[in-house]
Amino acid sequence: MSPRLSAEFWVHAYLARLRLAGIPAFVVAHGDDTAGAVLVKLNTLDGQARVFQRSFDLSSGDRVWIVLAEGDERAVDAAVARQRGFDPDLWVIEVEDRDGRHLLDEPGFS
Image (cartoon, rainbow, N blue to C red; front, side):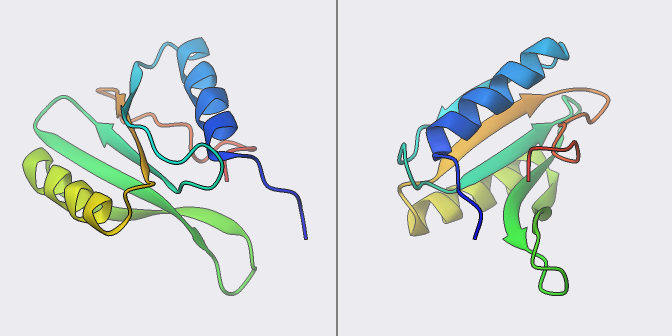
């Protein structure tokens, strides 16, 4: 079993990497520092959005990012609000990028 980073450490590292790439991002909801799950909302600034959550790929056992909801930004925000209702320890990071960059597919972010 591989060691896990605290949620707070992962969030700070992710935000720093986004800053280096010139991609604006903000903590919208601060979850539990050690064990909180993380949602990443990608806002493409055209009324559309997508929210990602970490999951396990059952075939490989790897952690992967999957799309939880996508479409109209208000509908995506409602999906995020529902998740926060189930899990008050949830972190929500909002990434704003017209080109749809989120960096979650880069090594080290799964």
